[in-house]
Length: 323
Image (cartoon, rainbow, N blue to C red; front, side, top):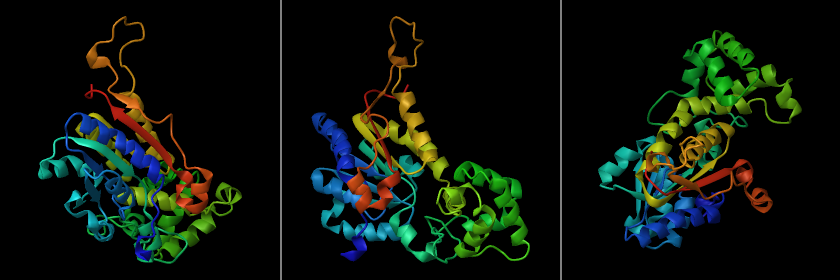
């Protein structure tokens, strides 16, 4: 059906890596449970449920519209899917409420979804006029307009520079503050027009990327606390994996990937001094990489699904408890 046209990125590879954790659960006599911490419209969850008939999927998403669509799409799998309205950093509470102690695999497909980009009223896209919302969970929190209309200039500089990696952050923030004195920030095309004016003659234009891209990314990350959520969720989820369980993470921008790489690299290295003759257990690595660095999509997938062009996939397997 057309409403399920969303194409999950690197689906076969994700299912394969999740399967490593599922196999470990079976070998240990554990009922395999997979957490899809970014359920979205259910594309990855569908692949996992179809591939592993004994797996239960706990699907988290902060977007109630996405949850409703996933429920319909995955209804044939019955109670093997448990959809939950929650942010991924609420995983511990969700699992406690469900009476689940350990999980076999965690899958996170980070960033903004196709559903959110395609619905004009959500305000994620700078290519079409829409209210400046950008909340993945529209039931709570500040909107992008709230941020633009209320944040001090110094805070705007910080988030645009740090989260958008925009070199002209100070010029953008100054213009935002000046313009809001004349008219409140309300729509995406209003902001895109300012960014065309302020950034459009700089490096972004020479690189042929839209001058609004970085600032829109920064606002989205701030509104949804994306990096804070990931920094909290990932260590907590790794702690919930049983031995042999896997964590599979798809990132689409460098700030996310840096967090994932740091957590995975730290857990995959012995923490003992290099000259120590015997490494005690409490200093040994407790994760082992399943990918060599970050994997990317093949050219044929990028051609058929442009969203996959920026994906960076990393995965690890748990071989011990966190030190």
